[in-house]
Image (cartoon, rainbow over all chains, first blue to last red; front, side):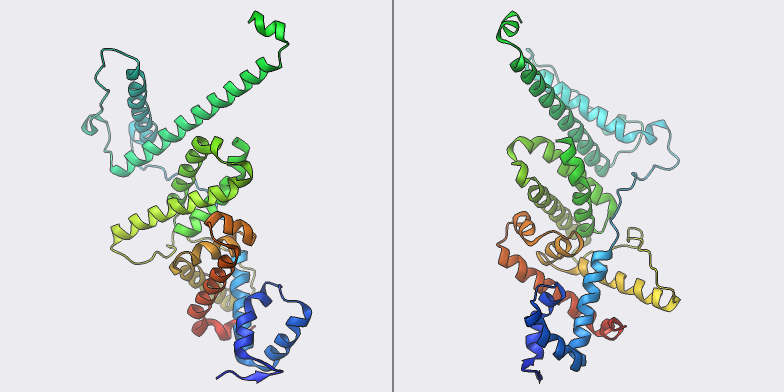
Length: 165
Length: 171
């Protein structure tokens, strides 16, 4: 049952509680709400909880990216399995790209899981694929930027020098 | 471009971390989003880059959460102990410190249990401190909807913490 203090009810207070916590109410709007809260323990508790939640969420520390978990008790191949898997995948992709311009078509490079010197899980392959895609995307971006820089440099040349090129 | 990636990387990771409550998965998502940035960058207007990155991050996290639900047969994800944030606490009284730590654990767990879009909006507004307009752009929602969703998200959090902590909040 909503109680009325200073012409505003508990429901009115709860409706505007978030705005009050955010400091979005004008002094005129906030004054009756504050008067109500001083006399109503239920609304005071609700306001305190809202403030605490807001304050705690804003105070959460920034999570930091951690180094990847290191494999334990593995040999060289195990320790470098991401790089190996990414390199294998990169070779497969590269072979696929090179194959496009060649006739006759060469058989694609295939690496069977059992041929690798360590156990490969689906998660390993997914991560390796992601690493390879990231590396390829970086290469593509660097190439694009280099090409743009080159174009820009040639555009900046006087006409005669550019013609000589 | 590189500077844009570095500038936004922290926010991408933080958003993904709070959505997923898992550091490794958040790092995977961050890398995936950066790959998309590198390959889609020419098509993204510079002033739309921030919201675009948050939208891509959220979608990647949704995909992971869906897969996780299928793997675990439903249920929501709480922050696990290993990945829980280590929060320094200056409270001098050990009892108050313990209570404060418990409150934060409950709060982050309840945040993890919030459904969408409440969780995304609460994270972006309360933790990341984004303005309403940027949240609206990132989540492709009208501005008023962002306000309503935020209000309801906060209310849900309060309702879930009310019984246990309302009295403790007054000190």
